[in-house]
Structures are given as C-alpha cells and as structure tokens.
Amino acid sequence: MKQGADAAVAMAMAMGQVILKEFYVDRQVPYFLDYVRRYSDMAILVRLVEQQGRYVPERLLRASDFDARVRRNSSFSNTVVLILLFAQLSFGLITITVPLRALDGHEMVKFMNWAQAIPTLQPGAATYVADVHPIFKLHMLLGMTIFLVFPFTRLVHVWSAPVWNLGRTGYQIVRTRRSLPRAPAAQAWERRS
Image 1 (cartoon, rainbow, N blue to C red):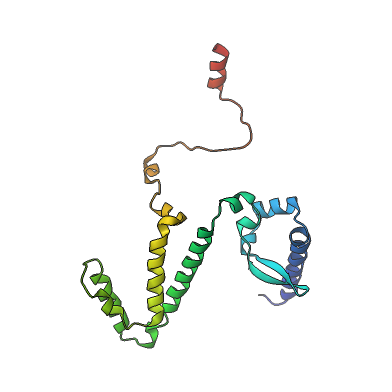
Image 2: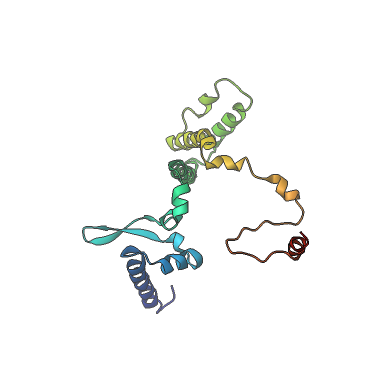
C-alpha cells in the first residue's frame, strides 16, 4: 500500500460494507444482484451472518447464493468433492515441509519404490510406505478416496471431454433468449410455400 493510501482503502472497505448491508443483507435488491452477477468480483467476498448483535464472516459467497438455478442443480456431492479437493491440496502443500527436515531424500525413495510396486503388482507394496510421516499417509488416503468417489460426482466429466470437437471445422452454436430475425433463405422458403 502506498503512503497516504490507507485512508482511501479504509473508506472503500466501509463503503463496500454499507452497500452490501443495505442492498444484500437487509434486503436483496434485484438491480444490485444483477449488477454483481455481471460486473463484479464478488466471488472473493465473504458472507456475513449476525451473531450477538454484530456481523461476523461465515464463508465465501457462492454462485448458489444468488442464482436459484445453480441452487437447484447443485448437490451435496458437489460440496463434498470441493471439500475433498481443498483438503487434498492443503495436505499436499503441507507435505512439502516434511522432507525439508531430512534432506537426504529417504522419504522420497520410499515413495518411488511404492509407486513402482503398484503398477507392477508387486506384493508387499504397502511396506514401503508403512513408516512414512502421517501427513503423507493422510494425503495418500485422501487421494484414493477422491479416486473412489469421482464416478459418483461431477468429476466424472473429466473423462467425457468432447475431444472430437477439436477437429470440428468452423461453426459455433450460440443459444440466446431474445428472438432473432429469420435468415433470408428461410424467409424466401416460407414465401414459396
């Protein structure tokens, strides 16, 4: 923050708080909700809830807070998968710090042997990682859990990507709610019949 800019930042934060309180928390104004959907970065904002006469942050705002269609189409499994992925990412970042304590690389050698034993179906592959740090075990367990639950969630769409569209030549389908004028060829065809 530049020198002398702290007052401007504080004023912007206060104004943002007032705008959110008056146009979203106290009552949901349709114009504000439409504006937020179209032009803002509100996805990084935090939802506030009232506790003991004051507002405290609860969680990040989501699209389902504003759009009924998203609310209807979201399921419990979507939330569970997001939590699993976030936890997996967090544990993965934490595992970076563990090998830094012992720079000889013996932990990584264990994982290398384990990773080679799994696809080659060697018996006793689990013995390679039996004595690793618990955070690694948790990270591996979570990874396998994600692998098991993904067929029952929207993660399954990772495997159903329409790769054939890459070879498709130059047309695009655009859906719109407004009525468009008919193509001249269609108008001429209608006049003939």
